[in-house]
Length: 609
Image 1 (cartoon, rainbow, N blue to C red):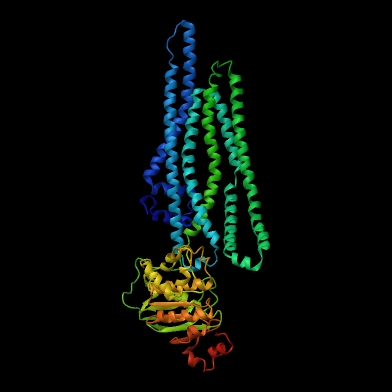
Image 2 (cartoon, rainbow, N blue to C red; image 1 turned 60 degrees about the vertical axis):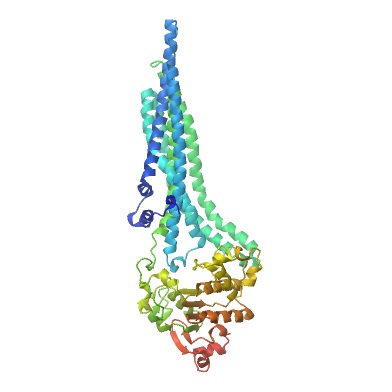
């Protein structure tokens, strides 16, 4: 990553502390400038220079007109040419315009660079924060809503910051300096014009009242809609297989109704803004002309001053437009910023200790679940595991069985530290898992779950995930062990074939075999398999089981499964009772099926295939 797009920790800290400090959007502007001092200084200089030059032009225009009138009158009175001094002022004006144009070009180029850098920094900050969150953070959130925050809100905030930085500095300066220049030209005309202009500003402030609140409500609705839309796209196979296209067509229309309803007041106020601004140009011009006519008897130069006054008013009405844009822009940016802050302020339930955790250098000989009690954070009143004690020894295989909801998959989540135990300890070689360097620990763990996680990429990239240093030839050998090589060889681009979103082109069984190939490549010490062969047909399952048995040799293996083929030959079966009863039976398959108890009832009822 280039230095221009280097992640900025200060920016994340500011975003994270938003709610604690009740920081406003202007605080965010200040922080962005503080973390980019050189660029911010350059931006301020160009904005100030532009404001000064814009304010000077009306004065130069007045000088040119007055000098031209004076030169003409002098020639008429004297009867000879004294030289045209006003030409010199024309040259000076031309040079000022060239300088102004150059500054505007440089400033706009600089803002484009700033916008792109800010967008990247915001996206990196929010993605890092999302990666930091524990699994429970995602339990009640829609992917579409999260994507809106990552993609739309970060872009919106960065774009608005650059625009607002320009408007907030330049508009007040032009208004102040422009006002001074108008009074230098003609105090009477300036007073009439400015009273009218600032009256329009007050009307604008009244019109855009609650604009920010409207935009925030609109953003909330759109985030929800994006979440539903992403869910619909992810469920496309269900929709196509259920014949519910017409139903979904009607549903998608319904979900947009609140958005259209909420957009009405936003559109109304936006139209009012445009109307006021267009009318203000005409009204101000009319007022100036009327005043010029009224004072022409006392000030014969009043008509001559109409041109520079008009130029000055043009310079003033532009920041008036900017002021009108500032309010909705702050509303949009604040709405998006609050969405980002909502992510940034979230704290994970536990730390991964990726920098200061314990690293176990020797082989992992034991993993002990000691007095484990567990309830999911989302349902703290419901106990899933109660006072569980078990030790997994190196090279041994274990299988958990039980009815749905007994906590089998929860065991795998605890071993992967997706969650922390409510009470009790998980000890790895005697060290508490919550003190270990989690990324290093997970490098020694392999996980095959019910829903295979396929990234958007080719076969090489998918199989190498988590073992990035492996070679292509090692990937091919792993795929052969998983009985996947022939399928891949027949794909259009072989191992370079793009598998689509979440492995869209693969069947359920093919996805599972891809994950198994990933485990063969990673060759972990600890293997956790949650229904690893559940998506495979019986014939393929038997073939894969041979490879899995080879993979399990000398590894600590924890299996969650219903099929006999996956648990029949494990060293120990642990039977979990329903409703948080914990371990109700332990033993080998041959022993348990003979003993009256929970396992035998499951077996005889056909719940163990």
